[in-house]
Length: 222
Image (cartoon, rainbow, N blue to C red):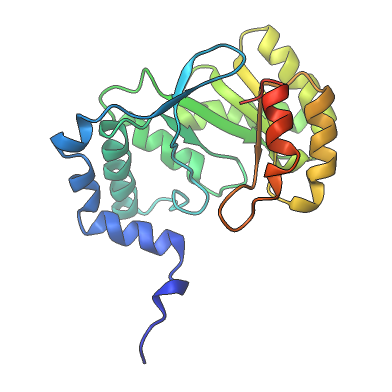
């Protein structure tokens, strides 16, 4: 039976591409010579590559040694090609631990912009969760921590504001992947002292163009 390639899972596709050596071709000198496209963070003017590395499903490979090495090669190619942002979450299985392992294999990650999330209904556990994420990544203060899918966002934002004041995180924000929560997100964007916001926006779902993107520009949110 002929397989419908349109239904191949993203994780399977990426792993197959890397295994076939595509990651190596991405790291060719001609690719590396092209300056990466960057965009300024509105609140500070610091510049970030417009394309980052997500880790939902794709980096949650546990202790599989072969799969980990594939991810190492993918990140190596990513950095050579000008990538500089990695985003994760405690919700993403073993992704944070695998990212931490991969970073120990990288020669130079000083310019990396690290982004993760807090994802729990309890404020006190959110603190533990963020501390654990730092240990898994093996990094100092995160550049960005966001409240994942607005879960207990008021409580976690209190912690994040304190951490930011103490220099334990550079930027803070909130996220949602659910269109039904755009109205709530809009209210938070209009009033909360955040730096970043993350929501669904792609060629198939452009609802954010109506209100969220203009509000983000008005409020100087990354």
